[in-house]
Image 1 (cartoon, rainbow, N blue to C red):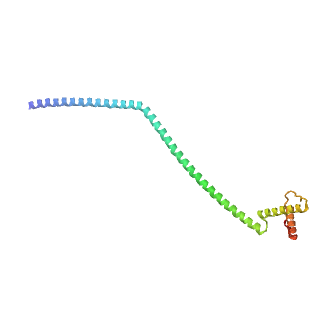
Image 2 (spheres, rainbow, N blue to C red; image 1 turned 120 degrees about the horizontal axis):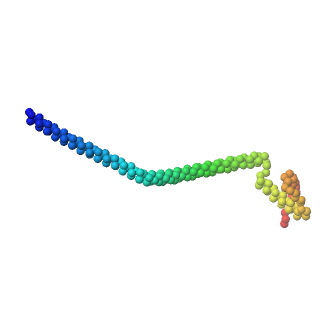
Amino acid sequence: MAKLKKTAKKTASANSANLQAQAEQLSKRLSESAQQVWLAGVGAFGRAQAEGGKLFESLVKEGLSLEQLTRKVATGRVDAVRDAVETTVGQARERAADTWDRLEKVFEDRVQRALRRLEVPSREDLAGLIERVDALNAELRKLGGASPARGGAKTAPAKRAVKKAAKTAKKTPRKTAA
């Protein structure tokens, strides 16, 4: 039993020395690993600082190109919308002009009919009467030798002259030149 105690003590002390060596080795590995993690972090920080400026500049460039692209697309859409609106406005103007022209024509026709009912002579009727008066004046000049006095364009005297010429033409038969 005494021998067993000595062996147990030797084994226990060997085991404890072995465990202590393993613990120290594990502690050393953990320390080295922590040191490597620390160095990796410091290296990453250094690289981030060095490349951060480059990354920032590249992000700014990408942002500018995206902004320009967006502006081009927006401008293209604005132009398309403007063209569509101008086309629609142009069509509306054409329709309004057509409608106005038709309304104007209807109004003119109705006024013309009302004037005919009131027996007001038309422009063509007046032009024909003026030609007849001029022809009668020319005949009078030939017959009488004197030229009839023509005043300014007065409406009332011209009507009287037309009426007198018409009465005279009805009463006296026309002489035709042979």
